[in-house]
Length: 314
Image (tube, rainbow, N blue to C red; front, side):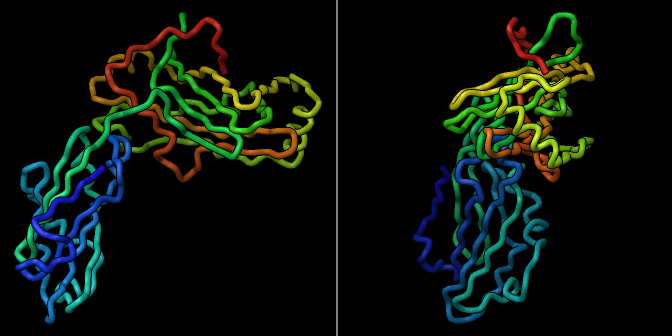
């Protein structure tokens, strides 16, 4: 959790005239979320006359080092007349997306100082990658998560991803499998300095909604207990249980992922899955306008694990 430190109460006027505050848009940032973090700034004029906040003369100090682009930063962004003449009793609030400068895991300190207010400081921690699994999709009946690990299969040049579906209901659910595009699959991978892609050049398949005929077919297969429908088969997941499968990145890359030198390897998952509980249909998908939720970051070097002998392959 972040901790804000001041020489005086936030509600007490500064001897310099203005009262400053800083805060974060994330209460518990991680190396995955911090690139999108905003720092929130506030200046209040508790006096009786208007004051010029002279924002471009204020400065940030990040982890003990003055931020050389402070004047450029505070000279940009939407603003009105209050930013050059702050009326008595009024407050200006603004924010900047500067989480990139706190991209390393660990403790960080941000100080804001200027000619019109006493310095304010905030201390916070950025957590490292955590958890063996990364959730990539969710719907009312199920979650879809990917293990932060890659697998290999004898005789294949591809690497494989381990996916787990958890049934959230107190009754069975099912989905049709047989085509890799009916489940979640690795669509792209990249090496990166950050646990997020810095350049996005991904091609994605359009996600078509099930037709009325396809919806009725899935309901019928689930209710009738039919296990196969031509090339597809119904996978049932008991109430409160998990189902695991492995799926390849089908464009090779096994040797290249093991040779990555940058700190992170990003596997980008894509897909849409339609689930049935016998009465209703649910869809878990990565939205078409999403560029982040499907990203699964792994620390390098990546050592591929041997796929279990009883693994289900899609």
